[in-house]
Image (cartoon, rainbow, N blue to C red):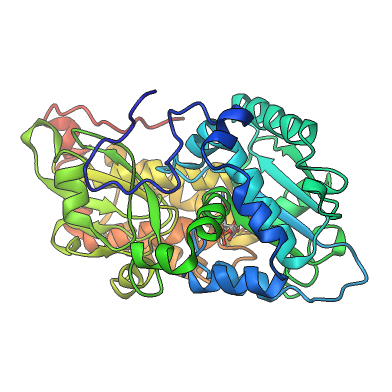
Length: 439
Ligand SMILES: Cc1cc2nc3c(=O)[nH]c(=O)nc-3n(C[C@H](O)[C@H](O)[C@H](O)COP(=O)(O)O)c2cc1C
Ligand code: SF4
C-alpha cells in the first residue's frame, strides 16, 4: 500500500488510512473500523459528549467552535426528530482536505456521523457533498450501501436495538451553501440562502428539528477519539486545541500538499520545512493562513503557532486550514482582485452590503490593477470593505471584506506602486503572475 507520509512531523490520525484501500468496508473493518461506534453504543449520550468535550476537538469547518459543547446544546427532549448533518460542501479557496477524507476514508465520516447521532439521540443523519465532488458522492453512496448491507445502518444497528439511517445528499455547486443554515435550506429543497438566527440549529434546525452540523474532518476525528481516548487526542495538540489538523499548503511552495500536523505547529516550519520552502529561490511576501477569507499576514508576522487562539490574537484566523503562500514577485493587488472575484461570484445576493459591496470592490480592483486607479481609491476600497463587516446576514460578507481590508492596509505601498507604474508593475517587469484572473 502507498505510504502517503510526506514529512516526519506528520501525525496520522485523520489520514491514518489514506492510501490503504479503506473505502472498501472490509478493509476498513480490518483497520479497526466501526469499533468506535460499537463502543459508543455501550456508552450513555452524556459520556460520549463528555469524551468529545475532553478531547478539545474544535470544528474544522472554519470557526473552530468546540465540538462537544456544540453537541451539548441539543435539547435532550424534543417533539421533533433530531438530525446530524455532515458538511461536505468544501469550497473555500485554498482548502482541499475534506475531499481526501471522503475519497480515502468515507466510512470514518459515516462512523463519525453515527457517533454524533448517538450522542444526541438522532435517528437520521445526512452527508451533504458539494455538487462538484461528483466522484466523491459515488464513493460515499457505495460506502453507505455497504454499511447498510452489513447491518451497521438501518434497523437495529449492530444488534443494539437502535435504529439509525444515514443518507447522502448532493449539492448543486454553491460556496454559500457551505454556510450551515443555507446548507439546511438547500437540503430541504429550497434556494440556498441563510436563515436568520436565533434560533440556532441545535434547537431549530433541519426540518425544524434540533440539528448538529459538523465539518467532514471534525466528524472523521470522532472515531479515533472514542477509540483511543480523549486524553490521547487532546495531548496531540495544544491546550484548548486538541489533536491534529489537515493543513492544505499551496501557493509559491516547493512541496505544496495536504499534511496532517499537530495543532499548534509553527507556521514558519510548516512553510520552510514541510512545504519545502519558497519556490525558485524567492522570498515570502505574505501568507493567508486559513483559507482565502481570512486577513493576510505579512512576511514579518508569520512567527505563529497554528492554532485557533494564537491566530485570532494575531488578528487573523485558522479558518479552514488552507495556508496560501505568496512570494515576493506576486502582485498583491492582483491577489486581492482574484479573491474578490470569487466572493462576488459566490455572493447569494440576499443582502445589499455583500451583493453590492463585492461587486463594487471587484470593479474598483479591476480598474486599479489595470492602471486606472486613483490614490483615493485605496481609502475608498478600505472604507467600503469596512462597512460590509458585521452588516450582512451571514459571514460571507465578512469573508469577502476581511482579506481586502488587510491587503489595502498592510500592502498600501504596493497599491500605490500601481499608480506610479501603471499598469501592474509586476507584469511590467515581465513577471507572469501565477494566479489566473478569471473573467
Ligand atoms: C460562506 C460560508 C461557507 C462555508 N463553507 C463551509 C464548508 O464548505 N464546509 C464546512 O464544514 N463549513 C463551512 N462553513 C462553516 C459552517 O457554517 C459551519 O460553521 C461548519 O460546518 C460547522 O462545522 P464545524 O463546527 O465542524 O466546523 C462555511 C461558512 C460560511 C459563512
Ligand atoms: S452575506 Fe452575502 S452570501 Fe451571506 S446572505 Fe448576504 S448576500 Fe448572501
